[in-house]
Amino acid sequence: MLSAKVLWPLFPLLLLIVIVCLTWALVVAVRGRKNPPARWLQIGAFACYLLAAVTAIASEGGRASVNLHRPFSFLAQVCIVVAILVAWKQQDRRLLWLNTGAWTGILADTALHFILR
Image 1 (cartoon, rainbow, N blue to C red):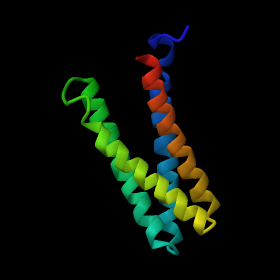
Image 2: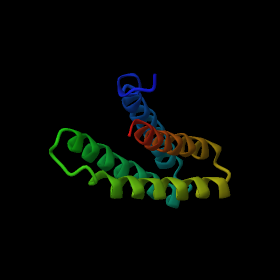
Image 3: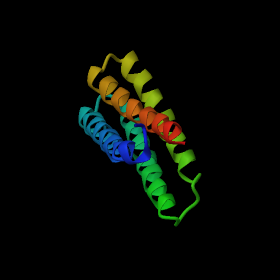
């Protein structure tokens, strides 16, 4: 029941969830202009996650090492966790929920990789 054929379509869905959450959080942070640390954290998280996604897609096609995306993914997660803490401290509920959604998507993707092993 939990075969790769059944679970494989979840990867693009999780990618879409993370990209939408990070894009929305980036727009909120840039338009807010009250909180420069949140803006830079969102820019960093978005850029690192895009690099992680591009290198993961390249590694699936055999054009890059399988482990190349891991440092970018780790940096994106660090930026997201720090952004969650900053949003929590400044009581910015939108950024808190959007970053939590993005981080949940990344963690679900990681769990799905371990399930399919």
